[in-house]
Amino acid sequence: MKESPIGYEIPESLDLVQIGDLNPILETGRRPKGGAVSEGIPSIGAESVKGLGNVNLSSNKYIPIDFAAKQKTGKVNGYELMIYKDGGKPGEFHPHFSMFGEGYPFDDFYINEHVFKLDFGNRGFNELAYFYFQTDYVMNWLESNGGKAAIPGINQNVVNSIWIVNPDHPKVKEYCEWVQPLFTQILKNCYSNMKLAELRDTLLPKLMSGELDVSDLES
Image 1 (cartoon, rainbow, N blue to C red):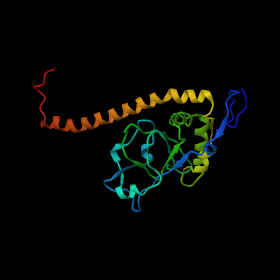
Image 2: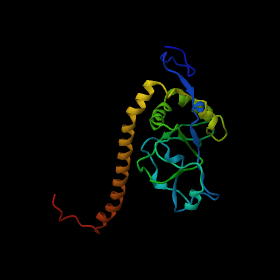
Image 3: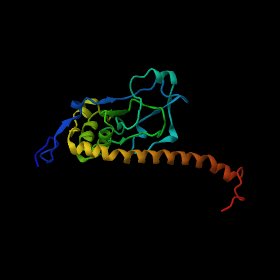
Image 4: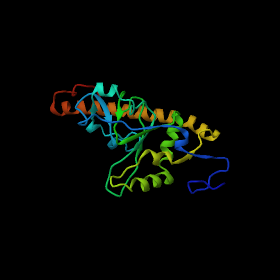
């Protein structure tokens, strides 16, 4: 074991690097002047970055199709790490993270300016980061830095300064390969659950009102 920059001992063979040294994509999206519109391309905000499979679909917001087509940042391609960027009570910042993909919650959508998209260009390493960001070291780092501002939040420098395991380490590579099919199945299940909930919400009022009669169906 050896000392590390994060204050914990780590295996001698393991190296830590700062996120900024890996040159990841770290960006936000935006909405047009005047805010969201009633239809168009879905735009995900901080309220939907609460954890894997936890999306607030009851308050969907959209950006115009032509506005989305001109955006150079903020498009969600799938399997990037989503980071809650700002919001909350003064002096308090509570980090949250999520990941989307496999058509969940939408095939084509963007994030707004209150969400960071972090993409290392390595899907498995993005998935490793999803769990790593919930360790005490990263949570404490984000909470302490995010709570300093009058409007709680973090910037790119805060994220880029985080120490993380070197993606070139053989065991890290092994983990990244192992975890990918698990995330795929989780997100496929999320998509199926979402579609089943939509079907339930469509059929239940009709059943309750008598518009649909299932009394003759065989058990």
